[in-house]
Image (cartoon, rainbow, N blue to C red; front, top):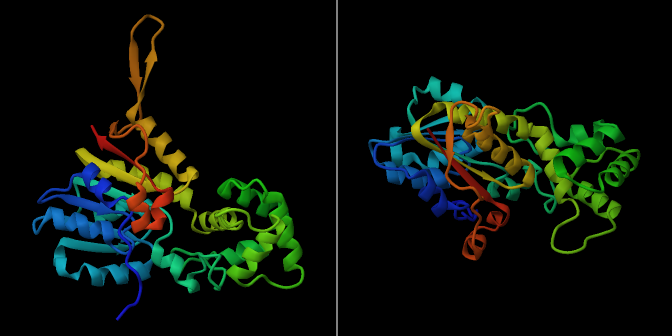
Length: 311
């Protein structure tokens, strides 16, 4: 019997309100994780509906397959990166999709499993791979990149102002031996930044940067968003939950490109310029969690939900 705490899924009610799953619907959860959102959608689409669940974390797939066993053949699974969402849907003959959900970032289960190396507050190896069979780990970056490369990764993917100080501190520390653990790295970063101030741990942004680099998350996001739009039927909806400004910026920009902008013509009038497939923005400002949602799942504090409908 597991002792793990099951948190309520982030922005669960808001996701259902925007995606509007109905009986017989066809849905894809591109980051199924522990299956919280998927379970809610499956309950709405009923026995005639289908949900395809994708995740590159095979431990998450195994856990969620057990959780959703009661839905039988309604729910299909694939252990893969959601950047391949269009190809995966084709393999499963999942077409004319009513809705796609992408819940980005690290799950509560990944954070609480010290062995996965995502958390700076739990002693574990410097891993951070979403796919445990992946070839690149956080240790490879921390112990292998030169100071300039480290600074670039921390600045670009963590938006960390102290990237130079942190990179130099890491290189100095590893001259005495390999940096092996999450807590060891977090202490090096905290010392470089002058200790902890306020609620946010000094290592937060650097750990984010390493995780993004290890898993190539931003490239996956761009490809996954384009693929998700392609598999939607007319009127189908795509919802994306992001957890930091880099993700949200990509989602916002891509949605705007597909929604289009009116451009004035020299001869008068205007024309709508947009990428295909075209979409309609369902919310111009991101939806965020209220105080209750944050109490039910602390991860929701930084979550932003944006959604579009294909036209």
